[in-house]
Length: 236
Image (cartoon, rainbow, N blue to C red; front, side):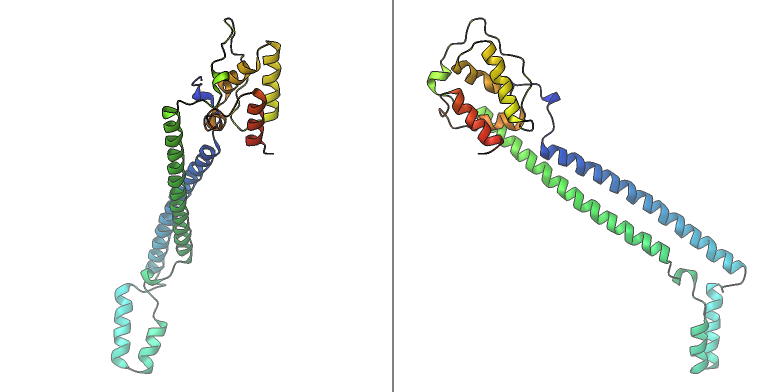
């Protein structure tokens, strides 16, 4: 069987899902970086605003706030001290910034989503790697053929050439592929045995895996091979 050119093979479902996960992770990382920059800018603006208010005398400095509070406690430990505490303007560092809090919450959420996406991608890579290792081991160690001895030993015509057909990877229309294969092979006037031996040469991806997993010596005619092919990719 031919090795095939893997560079032009369509991506499997797992590989396409991994690509989508990678794209999502990159987008989340970009958004997280943008949010961090926004948080830094908001913090800077908040500090500048507090400094401006202090220069205008609209809020006391940290020392003034503490001295006023201490004086209030010395003059009256009861009602006047409580009143001074209530009226004291908090230090800028003690003022809650709702914009910054919202940005922090959003950044935390994005980081959590990014972590989850990375875990999913790690799991997908593990599954793909495990499947690839299993398929490779099967190909390396398999020496049995799904065809009977009669089919395997049927001689190929001296001038026979494998027809150039579109490959089948398991995602296209199996009936259309099977019909095209039959038509081309019948035009060449080849036997049933040659059709059996030629059929797997254009299988790729999951279709190649399916063929390699057929029971040893289970296929004696092209009709049997066609039925197994249709049952697997359509069901019936």
